[in-house]
Length: 51
Image 1 (cartoon, rainbow, N blue to C red):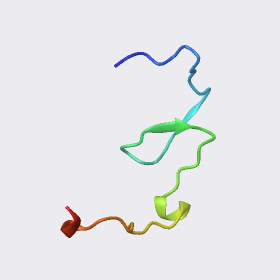
Image 2 (cartoon, one colour):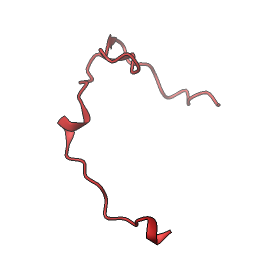
Image 3 (cartoon, one colour):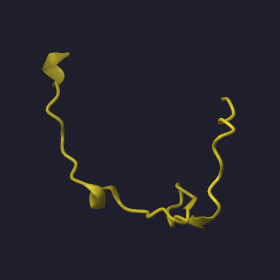
């Protein structure tokens, strides 16, 4: 893995997200459940018979 470009800088402050696997997030971020962001549904793609 390579180092990030030198133009990227860390955020000035972080807070605990309240989600164990996520860890700390920038203080201005809002942590939400996916269901609060939008509606998710099964796509209209192929099925097993299409394989």
